[in-house]
Image 1 (cartoon, rainbow, N blue to C red):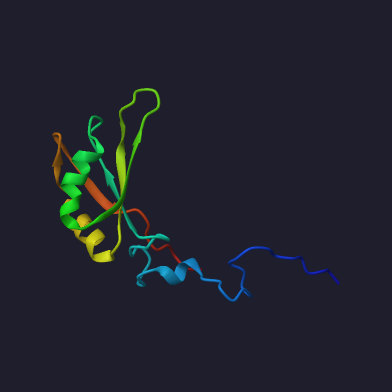
Image 2 (cartoon, rainbow, N blue to C red):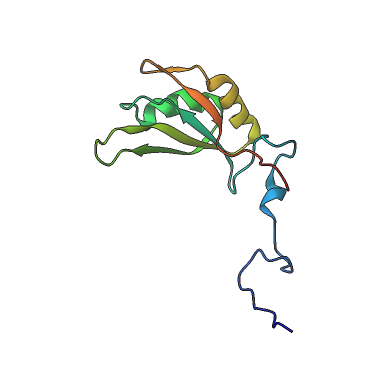
Length: 123
């Protein structure tokens, strides 16, 4: 018989504090929004290369309190890569940003907004 290997750390089936990541979702069908570990993250695309955090904070803070905003820059050019991740505390805030944020004009470019994480197919 094969010896059972030891498992260290949290998250194993027998661990008392194990929480499955899929239990932290809103529920629903595949493609439904999925909560990240700390909050609801939206993905904003078509961001102008000269936009900064202040521009995005001004546009998206009207939907709720922003927990964090990540605006990645291209290492070679120093300009924005064209997307941004914004985290909200509640689903309602993030949902409002997705529904009402799509189509916002920022420095002459029309933004597209979606949830960063969606529920996949189970099975």
